Length: 368
Image (cartoon, rainbow, N blue to C red; front, side, top):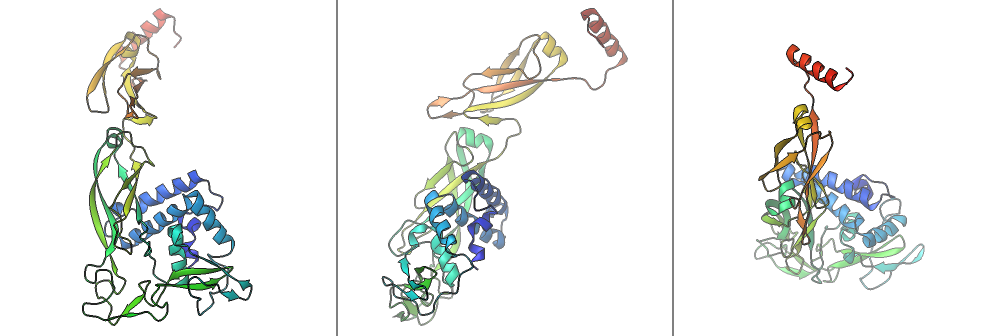
């Protein structure tokens, strides 16, 4: 189980991976396993959560540093089994190697879940101190929506308190008694390597109390997963990696407070436009005669309108023209639209056309 929680393995990157490599691996995997791309696929949904959890730790420099330190001490494989009979929170535990330093990993985001997994307890994303819960997800948006702004629908799996038991884990009418394992604190400590690690009590699942009969809806966990559908307002000028934080739209903490939803955008490629900062680039074809003699062509802009572009006589392939203020507006400034010209050469000529072209070449002194 510890191996499954090796975040480098989850993202398929080496331990020395750069922040950019981690970011690229996360985007690739998140797009592949996102629930929107795999409707009804529970395995893909679980994989997406695992990928998001790994990214939440490895993309944060401080969390990654602490995570790497834990891996160095063998917290994710290669160490002996935890000692039985955990110490009470706030105390220290003595093992074969001497005294352990007790550490509370609840403030390390996904790392708290790692140790829950290692010791076989529930994987909770919050604690009873009211820390704001954050759920991360990746949403794919069209190029023009990213550039101009707009609304996109999104469905995200969110963990909520069970409506049947209101998060207590107890069946209706069941009696609740104080957990004898953790004495009602909801946490126990285990000596592990050089640390005494806190984790949710497996007997009461971190609640501090045990019901005489568990809730049938949530199987005593106190939480259920629901699909929340939202309409996201995409700010103009958004790009891949742009993040949007939605207050109160994420999972609820153990205290019942609504957490936040952190959305990362992945912008789809467009068949006509590409982006360079606030400028947009496009390519238009013209024929040999238009390039040689000059012409006027209509060019589509981001907002769907068309502008007339004057192409002067003698235009060479690859020449670029700038249409002012038709790019992306961001930060109070708007970029331009850059139009590159390609010259199309006929693949076949009729005999008459070939004769005319040869006559032109001879008159112009061109070799052929």
